[in-house]
Image 1 (cartoon, rainbow, N blue to C red):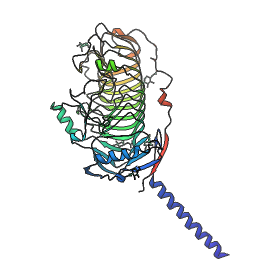
Image 2 (cartoon, helix red, strand yellow):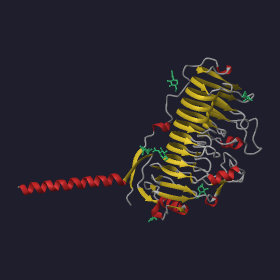
Image 3 (cartoon, helix red, strand yellow):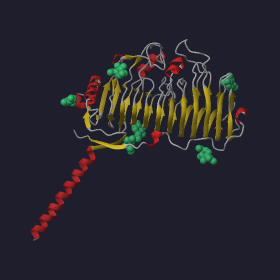
Length: 466
Ligand SMILES: *[C@@H]1O[C@H](CO)[C@@H](O)[C@H](O)[C@H]1NC(C)=O
Ligand SMILES: *[C@@H]1O[C@H](CO)[C@@H](O)[C@H](O)[C@H]1NC(C)=O
Ligand SMILES: *[C@@H]1O[C@H](CO)[C@@H](O)[C@H](O)[C@H]1NC(C)=O
Ligand SMILES: *[C@@H]1O[C@H](CO)[C@@H](O)[C@H](O)[C@H]1NC(C)=O
Ligand SMILES: *[C@@H]1O[C@H](CO)[C@@H](O)[C@H](O)[C@H]1NC(C)=O
Ligand SMILES: *[C@@H]1O[C@H](CO)[C@@H](O)[C@H](O)[C@H]1NC(C)=O
């Protein structure tokens, strides 16, 4: 009887510690994450011969892995795990129903060999590459005509190693346009999240001609003097959410676009239904959020809330000019906290830069219904530098609850308004004459969410013990 009790006790102890041990193993070997869809199949880059030594090129390995896993796209899809290590690669494309998961401690290092980025055609809504009249180097990570694509991680890194490209660009040695870090085109159901992106050769994240897009929890870093290192550029996209993103870069932290001049007008695909939330920006040479200058397909129904900036050139900047045509309308901003800025409000109706001489200087943009409320800014040089177009004024500005404090000594005019009109309420200092007409105490902010805001992510996982 006593023996039996002792055996029971012993057995109890053993099974207890066994359970503890198993629990620990399980805890350590499972990675969970949130995504628009989970995948039935899991593979590791090393399954395809990947070498994470930081020297060997894995371009063919990434391409083979995606090609292989595209076979199961219609059978529950696949997640490709990039484990800790330094994985050098040139350009590769993704596939549908696919997740690229970059683990913490993993760095995808962009090859600095231009030969690793095959040239592709200019975008149809641009007519030319943005850096020159030639073609475009493929983006590091690309994809076209896809559905249901996730690029995520537990804060793994993609390092664009852009310095070689910045040097060539600054010396005007480029005929073709620099690669972007991530460019997905003609695609839908996209998620890019939980990653650190550094030193892109040019723009970081460029979804174009795409819809139903979630971009969140990104840390984006490039030197503040690096050329055109825009953070996130949704371009002719619909139903987009960008949130919890922290950008330090050489140009605009977020730039909303839709094609250029006659090419963008002809292509006619706007960016609309988008929310940008909890963006933090540090960009002394760029806007926190730019609308344009490429806007020839139209920009409409864009919301921004809870925006923070330190040491940036401007808050929201509208950039357009004769030749662009189309419209920027129904812009809603609620809550900006800005510290050390050249401009809080900046609109430019004289933006140059044309793809060629084929643009129609009579194609004038409509800029209307631009709403800003709840803005606090300190250490500012100019509150508003607001220019429209002679004969084509920018209309329907509404500013409410805006407080701007200036640097000492205050060197510039507080406001400079030309060819703009609108209303205001509770704005300090008193805005320029054309905006002093009394407006609502709260400028409009739509109460209904953009559709993507209602989308719930799933909890997905994989076992990282191989
Ligand atoms: C991103 O990572 C954090 C911390 O690991 C986690 O709490 C969050 O759910 C992740 N987000 C997504 C979209 O997976
Ligand atoms: C690629 O896919 C095939 C199935 O078509 C599979 O048998 C093979 O093992 C895969 N290759 C690798 C390296 O995983
Ligand atoms: C990626 O896809 C684009 C668009 O289909 C194509 O032009 C390009 O050649 C592909 N790149 C690679 C490396 O396969
Ligand atoms: C991700 O890593 C970056 C760079 O190390 C860091 O600044 C950031 O805080 C990290 N993000 C999270 C959510 O841990
Ligand atoms: C005015 O805006 C500031 C900054 O967003 C906010 O903290 C404050 O609550 C707003 N005041 C009113 C009356 O809405
Ligand atoms: C005010 O704006 C106009 C048009 O944008 C510009 O030509 C002018 O130089 C500005 N004035 C000052 C004092 O900045």
